[in-house]
Length: 442
Image 1 (cartoon, one colour):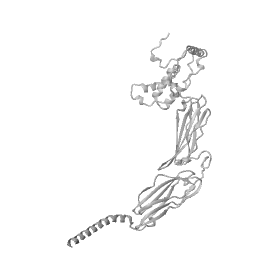
Image 2 (cartoon, rainbow, N blue to C red):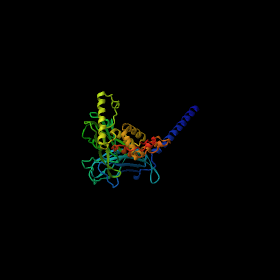
Image 3 (cartoon, rainbow, N blue to C red):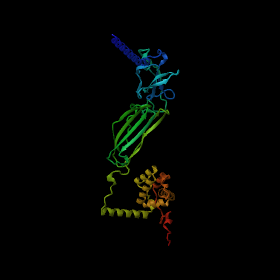
Image 4 (tube, one colour):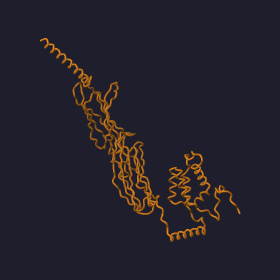
């Protein structure tokens, strides 16, 4: 009997100790689940705030951000946002909802809910955004309860366009309200290198910040005399960023010249409304030239085949006749100038401020046209600029090659102008002649 009673007492003490451990584990959970006091009306607030532009009213199809914010001083078990039917608006949510903690005016901490929605009014007028409802499942003094927290209705005015021309309701030009617009233009191959019957593909990418892809304009019309264009499909996409959507449209054409001469392709201007500065601006698909460029194909770079004796005889006769014409009628009646490819190479190097490329292109031109080289050396201004350029590139000081290259565009313009040959029986004495030693006189 004594052993039995001791066994029962040991089992009872073990059971009591186990109950104590369970109670110690459950107590913090009960305290966490049960608020210290009941829910007051000011403990649950839900607001919707539109970020309207200066002046208090947006234009049709202009982006406006709605900031949803909830502040809740209670424990939330479940939550769900019920959005009203946004009639007369297009909309998209920017990113995911965020939850955090914020300090109340009385110093206590509370849960903070945030969501951002971009809306785009479709018409002019005064509209009202109906209340959003945040359905919360909370723990109220240990009781599971569902509460709907409603926002206030939001008046939403959409202004009438008062600018000169255009506007949301005008059929032309296309209404494009955006924070920023950018255009990239890509050709494959370069349009200046293609010839009649060949094809180049042009791809233009238009990006607008603060827009949906459906609001971008249709493919621009690219038409001019002498080319045949085949329009490709238009690709549209919307990229969601924290500051708003970015709309992107990709336009594509295949372009084929139908005439052998150079074809100018005019720029295409796209007007758009800057929603930051509240002014009209223009984006531009740049002008280009089709044909007339330097050859870039392997067969064009091959040396010409040797000419036969009849061709050489005809060329010699033509050169002899040209010399007689210059002597008989006076060189002052003709003009000498660089060909189109040489002039373009000089201007391209000057625009890039590449002195070495400029000097290399100039050397090729001087070897091809010694008569022009003599006229350049006889021009005091050009000779002075050429001496300065050579001193910078080939001087003794190793740091001069990194010095500024001077006014290369001005020098390129002077070198590419047509010039009359020197008149009179003798050409003027070259400016650099004294460097060759004294000249014997009769």
